[in-house]
Image 1: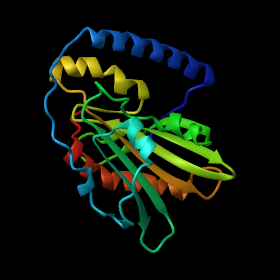
Image 2: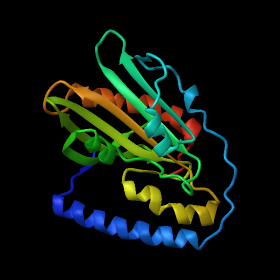
Image 3: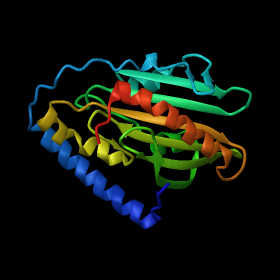
Image 4: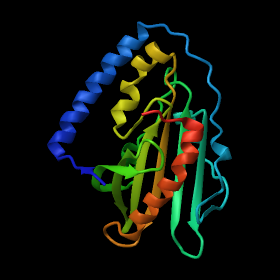
Length: 225
């Protein structure tokens, strides 16, 4: 897996540039009137309740305030538990049909610190997946709170592309609107509790789960490049 790490100064510079880009794009969007295509809901709730050796315990719901703030058109929130082991994977997928009148995907690196989690490491990793893509870029992050640690993998996906960087979700909005008359996007997040200070078998578990999950996602969300 290829991994790319960013220093604090680089992150600050990127954040400032992203904010400027989003402000400019929001202004440009108000000047453009495009009738978006009517898109069907992808059917996330039809994702299998068993993925490999992992079985879901049932559907969960977002807090009402969070759901109202994010306003996804469809989402799933499930805990998958590996058979014969205590390994647990928390899967959250949120689908947004259009970014015109919604906040859109809420990046875990924004919402987790707001819940008291401290980011201790972050990098972009290319994860092997089946199919013609070969690998996909994902954010691989470790968070800590009250002595507990979690490993978080997340990425953004739609029928046109897959990417890891938060700003791309908004940055792609206007070009997609003009070219495809659509601005749909999904956030896919996988969380695994850590037993130690650094990922070990938990990383192997999360990567294997992602590998098994990915074909199910492409069937519903698509991914062409």
